Image: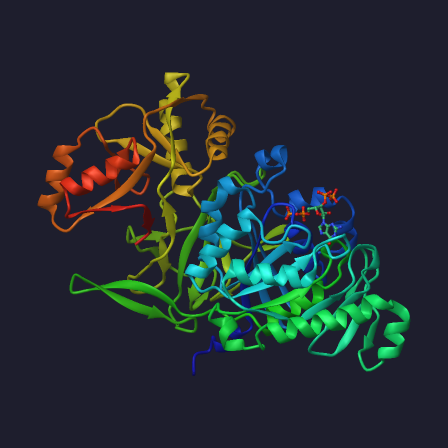
Length: 536
Ligand code: G4P
């Protein structure tokens, strides 16, 4: 390969951290930042909750609720690699946002609470990773607590992930008797010591060849660990890097995030095991025909895709940021770029990277990096941005809402602000906004109840619009496409009161029961009803 970008691409790792709430994702994120040198230890230790807000919870509502509504992005450098870490909201009502984040990464780090095993929210995230064959690294956290047997946990991970596990570290004891972890590769044991200020080099490492010493120190727990490790190794797959990259095998690590223990091993695994940015599929139009095109990370043209839009992240910057995952080429300040959907030039007021707690102006960015364009409209989720020929990336998912509410504006004089607010929140993907074709009040569609509350709150605080949300008869929606305009017209004439357009101006059919879709499908067999819309 002769591209000048090859070495930059190769040293990048872009991954998402996923877990069920409370498994220790925030703690682990913070420790990864700490060990890469991205944040100072004092700041991190002092007031963990406070720094949690500073690093990942930007919006006021998140602070009030103590949950992570928005996903955040952090860049750090470690061992001459550039690591982009994307946090994902843990609350189930924000899973849509999480799914989109997973389209922007090349691998995922799954954090599991060793007492609880694989929990509901993790299961849903795993499904998305599996669909995309995203490689997953597994971290079993909280070994300093009384937890489940490691063999048991591994078995569960295998079953839930539907892929073999390969232990890379193995715990000696747990809870009060937690002695540390055995590293199967280096054949040594790292001795556990509690304390959130520990640095990786502070932990004592003893080679397994000094078995007598380890036995004398850790007693039965050491022998038990050796025995269960042997069983685990016998029952699990051998390390196969290709299988991991294909999303068909997961390496498993044990540790205790809050004690900084076992974390360095995970950070090293991100560098050593997880893949650099890969190729992405896009469409181009050739002679009015859509043609698939593979975009390689070291291609010279700049191309990126908007996987998240967020307004007013920080009270000091009342703006909107389009988060772009760079897919190829190099971004440099001042370069000319176009939003391919509209063919309009993109003129951001600023372009930033996300260095742990602060935003910084970008000097350059390559495939795998996440950059934020400060914009004032004109950009939507799923938009492709390039400095060259027209192309459109695919794969950003929108799920058909399962809950609907009608928006009633308390003060009719604020109609304009309401429209603007709903348009922007719809473009952000905070909620889905439907404008009924037959007129009348706007409808909001959500996947989770909390989305309604967030939108109501944000309309009030950011757009000075007080709304009331009223129940409505709809319980589902399907996006509609047809093979010919005539078929579509016929369908539209048959259901004039059931049609609406969403924020991306895509036609949707609103349903009041699951039978609606079946009946409509029987009546119009050539119309396509989509439960999922991929931006294309
Ligand atoms: P989340 O982002 O996945 O929701 O989890 P978070 O990191 O906030 O961790 C959830 C709780 O689990 C926190 O306790 C945290 O301190 C604790 N925790 C994380 N890692 C470990 C670990 O390795 N061992 C033990 N024993 N606990 C761990 P909290 O009481 O909710 O918060 P805090 O008051 O401790 O800050």
